[in-house]
Length: 160
Image (cartoon, rainbow, N blue to C red; front, side):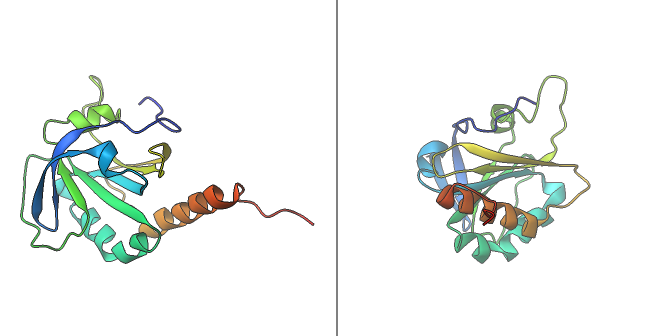
């Protein structure tokens, strides 16, 4: 996997779903303009990931962070308005390739989270084995550190 940290996030033009409504041809870079983003990739087998993010959706919202999910399965399902964040189906794996998650050698996708800042730079990547769930509280902790750094320029306390 090529390191994308401190690089501008790749762009894509895709239909998305939010609150069970289809939004046509979303230009990803325009959509995320001036927003902090958690972009996570998962599969239908790990649908629990979506619901874990949903449970703490308010915690992301108060931090001015938008959660976006990329589902890489061919199976599409109705979420019955339960998921508040934007969802893309990457069934042809174009988005996954743009984020260097798949290569000609590595065809299996690991669950991955990209932390994207309000200037569209990827600031952190967290890669998880498919058998390990995300720790949403750890993601929130990283967001807090990241936003503190953006505001104050230092995440460490100065010694007096």
